[in-house]
Length: 474
Image (cartoon, rainbow, N blue to C red; front, side, top):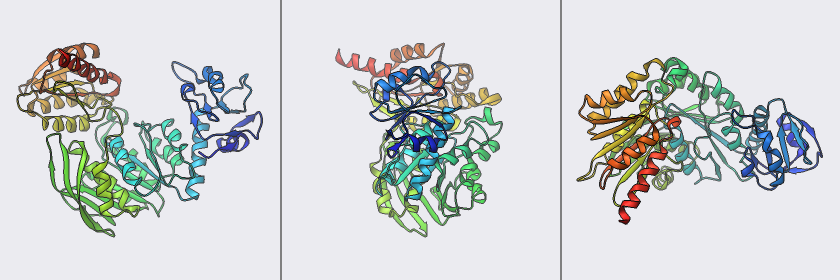
């Protein structure tokens, strides 16, 4: 944000100010005392394990010019006091975004059951061709991450790209009140978090809160290949753009689709980007990110670029140079000695698990095997065992030679995989999975590592890389 006085920030955050009103604060806003920069605002957030108030003094010692707290502390800097510091943070972010929108900022938001982060990263790399762009690192898609990302905008920022997650009805609407998007992208509606929402239809209702929040002058960018997403065209007053794979969308003032899709040995897709409607043209795209599912993600990003007056050629060039910006999402690790590890361990749901399995199966190399270390997909509710069984069946049908499975639903995964001919080892912990995988994997193998965030399977990918490096040195 632009540097402002303590008095101005207190007013924007709707807090009570204690201390000198004229002190300059900014440009950074942080919640971690280890990330303090000179002049920043430190926000003390309460947590289950730690309380940010306990680190306020360290933040001030590190250079913070002011603190946002829920109780007055003994500190010689301005203190912005609020009953709820997270809400005050959101108030501040919303006010800063509104100020910058008035100066020409375009706010773009992305939601969906899967692919949000990858799509967000692609959108940001397309839009930066047209102007300075702020986007979150990783997901940062909740009531803390979204405001903190929004507060990074400054006078030079032309585009803000936000990722919006949802834990229930009304959550996306609340986030939209903060980031105030004029462009909204919905990637898909799947089974992620169905245990929390109760049904896929309820998930669709929650995701539609994004398009309902858009202004008439804005753009709703919808996946034409997903009927639940396509139907959201009736839920918005904004202009509509549609994207789809292989076939031209049947709706949208701007339409983008892919033809002649093909993949290389690392499942990086090449295709012809087609555009019709108010913007027309075609250009060749060669993606640097792996997985056929990235074609749909890149088409969503293409629609964003086209609605922001980039040409088809400019969009295609940007997509062809875009890389994976967020860790542990189809991240390919070329371990010494030849082992290839596909680290997709950041999160998992039935749709993303299927996409990762298919992409990895396409990477099988001569003389090598397909292995997978898979764990629980969380928040699926009563249908969890069935969903895990289907994932195991898919892995077996795709020809995975051996699976290492961990978690509460490991047996369901194992049963599905064994029914289709895969060997399976059920282990009791993430650390055990890492050791078994390290023992099994060898040169020319391809190993997929994937589960929901709670299982922390990135440690398995790291262990595989370490072991491969040690073996190559012998």
